Image (cartoon, rainbow, N blue to C red):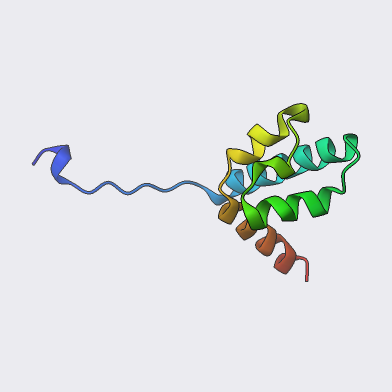
Length: 85
């Protein structure tokens, strides 16, 4: 039987993904602060609308946050919130 006949299973550790989201959010938050925006409002606006215009290009923040899916960011935020309760 060739390897093309078998179903492969793809898995990845969750922790590095969680760190990626956290690192990106910290970098985006910092860029928003430096530009004088309210970081929470801007990030929420982006997450709700999907419009990258809420995130500045400063420090490459817009490109960084667009590398992540919005639902993945929300998932990590909910996990983090519930862990700390």
